[in-house]
Image (cartoon, rainbow, N blue to C red):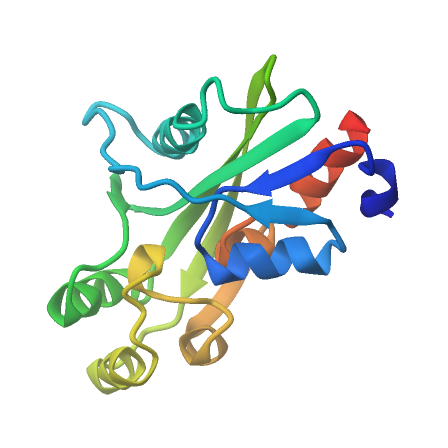
Amino acid sequence: MLRNKLKNHQIILASGSPRRQQFFKDLDLDFEIRLKEIEEIFPPELQREAITNYLAELKAAAFDGELKENEILVTSDTLVWHNGKALGKPKDQQEAFAILKSLSNATHEVITSVCFKTDTKTETIFEITKVTFNELSDEAITYYIENYKPFDKAGAYGIQEWIGFIGVAKIEGSYANVIGLPVDKVFQYLINLA
C-alpha cells in the first residue's frame, strides 16, 4: 500500500538498528539505508522527548544539502526515561545490571522521536509508551544480560526478548514504540505525504 503511494519518492532510513530496518521491511516499503557517524550528545538541560527530538534532528542534520527532490530521509532516536533521567545504552555488564535493577518493580517511559527530512522541510514526531516491570530477581537480570547482551538497547532491554516475556507486567501505548519505532505514526505520516 505505502510502496505504491510513495512510488515517486525514495525513502532513506538513516538507522543501523536491525529492529527499525525490519519495521520498514514489514511496512512493505522500498527504502535504502544510509548511515553517518553521529556523536549523540545533547544539551544537559533537555528532558524527555526534547532529548529524542534533538537527537533525531541532529542525525537528520548530517544530511543537510545532500537530499534530492524526491528523497525522504527518516532518522530516529529512542530513550528510556526513568526517575527524572535519560537511560541510554549501557556501556558494560555492570551498567546494564544497575539499569535493569532500577526498572524492576517500577514504571518507566520509552520515548521515540522520528524525524522526516526532505530537501525543503524537516518535521519531527514522537511517541511515549509507559512500561511497568514486575520485580526482577538478580538471577533473572544476570541471566538476561549474559544470554541476550542488551548493550545496543536503550534501557538495557528489548521488550521482544526473554526479559519482556517474563518481566513486563503492563504496557500503556505502542508496543512497537518500545521496540524502537512508533510504526503506526510513521505509517500515518508517510501516507499523508503521498
